Image (cartoon, rainbow, N blue to C red; front, side):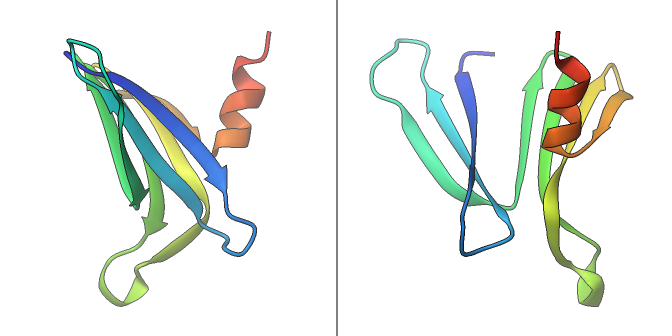
Length: 93
């Protein structure tokens, strides 16, 4: 894929919406680059992807989610769809 991607969730105490930030580093290393205030993030690796979506609806119904929707998709099949707390509970050992 050529990039190391770190997904960082920081809950802003003055805002319901999570601050979806992406931190990336190129294949040669070096400093990382941060892109802040994203409404939607998709990470792709071959036929797999993970998405984080802070908004729902379209047009006049478009609004912020209380919690970001996290989806894990493997070969086009949704393996998980829920919020970050639900994902953490599901993967606890």
